[in-house]
Length: 392
Length: 185
Image (cartoon, rainbow over all chains, first blue to last red; front, side, top):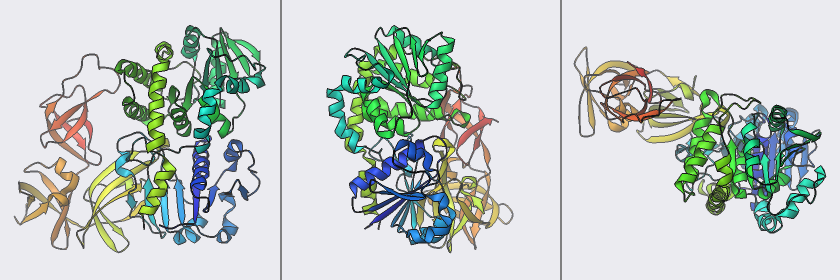
């Protein structure tokens, strides 16, 4: 299919995940198709503005680095003036806003539901399937991101891929750049342990104790309000030392509360760190692509269905482990870390990280292999572009 | 109108000007409680088969076709023969017509056969059916916590996950919409 314009429609459910994936997809799509008009239509510009400085939340229509950003809440009176797009992407089945659906969607040539990422095996069977429900005009398809060649892949960030060798070569400099605002510039050395903590609200008692036992000077960059609330409560329980409003110490571990980190800086932080605790979809993908050991904090779902998602991720990851004992320990840790029914600042789950820190290098090797595979075989934007040329 | 997630094998939908019979149905949960369904649909006019994916909340116009209570007699090759219990008329359905219902079909079973004009086009299963377990994996010692499941096979050859306490010879209740174990009968 020939196309010269694409609209990506996004509804912000909560947090930054939906808008973050959409922004990254739009950026990469424009890079792959520089002559294409790429528009994001989002019903809340605040998360976008936080992740990509330069976006003005008060402007309903704006251009930024080649992308057109539209506040879809302001659509009704002027939707006709926007003009239709050849391709309409409905991000995460968000439902296209009424005025757009009535006036512009019927003029599109394809309507694609870009779904959430999942490692579950059923995803293969749903990928690229057509929907017969197309009362609004164009044919509708489902595009399923995933971790195998038969799925839609994951968004590979070109800029990060280009930056990775430099980060690896000058890791200590990059690390000190992140420590500088805390007055710790120069504190990072070649043998210190760096980690990010970006999870849903939870307790970190066992993590702090096991980081201690790793026997290295360590720096934990805690990102996001929920992880910071959980960490603050944990430090109070464990009598951590408060060094400043956003800086704590627990034995040899410095715990640093990061201000909001824009997308590009967050990607760099994941690559600099020795391990990453990440939550949601996009950060999980970034952690895998960073090639560093990660612990995934899954979005808690009804009837503990998130445990099924965690198990599926482990199954997808298993093939990259040479040592089955290391994998078994890692799988157990991921399961116990996520074995919770709801968010809590208490240490509500029974995980232990001693083996994780002991196995860090082996898990890193496996993550790098997965990253290598994904980068070469599962580039979502490339696969998405191929799919567009498949459909007539 | 009916949401996609409420459909099941044997239902008939009108999409555009065409009538489709649902012959296979699966439901899957996406992230953040978003869900999707995949269906195999048979066009009742042309007989062509389409496989389609929908958001669980997509709405369809459902059409109620005539149903007749019939008894499944036997299968021979690709054909499955049913008999009207009132007038003893026999009708054949194919594997494609039956779709997922094949997982639960037992001889002598009484079932709703869906008719399009005078022609049998499919069957509609009750939401729950009972079936006997003919094979169950032994429970692994120590696997007693949480919702640990094991693989079992029913008398119709259907494989599913059942709780550890289910053994060969037990009769269980199965939800025909998703093929999941419900309870011990």
